[in-house]
Length: 68
Image (cartoon, rainbow, N blue to C red; front, side, top):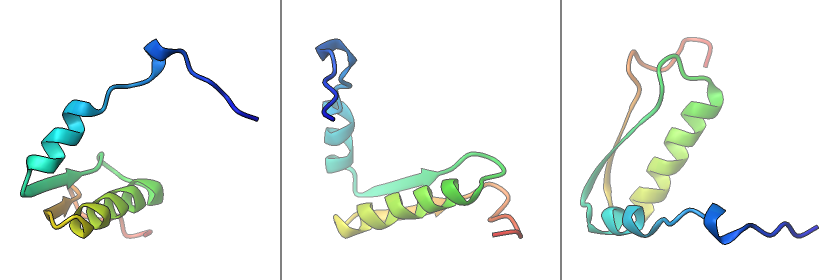
């Protein structure tokens, strides 16, 4: 099933893409009291940006929860 979007519903990522392209160092953060999905997203984004040659710092306020 193909779902089409109205043109006004498609986000314009041009500015964000340009900022990431220009950046040399990037700080990636997650929300407070993160769950496994948040930590996985944080690490996945950091890994992807590093693969593009970016100097990435991934940070979690308060550290990774003990249950993870």
